[in-house]
Length: 118
Image (cartoon, rainbow, N blue to C red; front, side, top):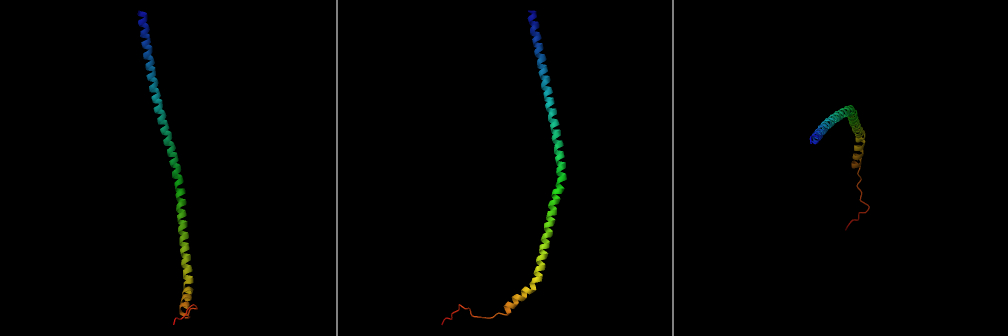
């Protein structure tokens, strides 16, 4: 009987050691997962910072191109306005003379389709 109680006692001790080892393994696994998560977050932060720096470097180039384009369009618009004003001033007097001559030199005529009614 004592041999059976010793065997049961050894089995209980072995079960306790196995449970302790399982608990220890779970704790290690939890620590590894937590460490892996922290490392992943650090990598993500580093990647985000790198991409942010690249964005900050590219942004002035792109925005500079857009502002240069707006300036170029503004200059073209002003050039067209000046060109139209110059053309207006150049041709205005001759056009006014032509219109006035047409008004002053009117020749009243009876229309060819006119039929007097009696």
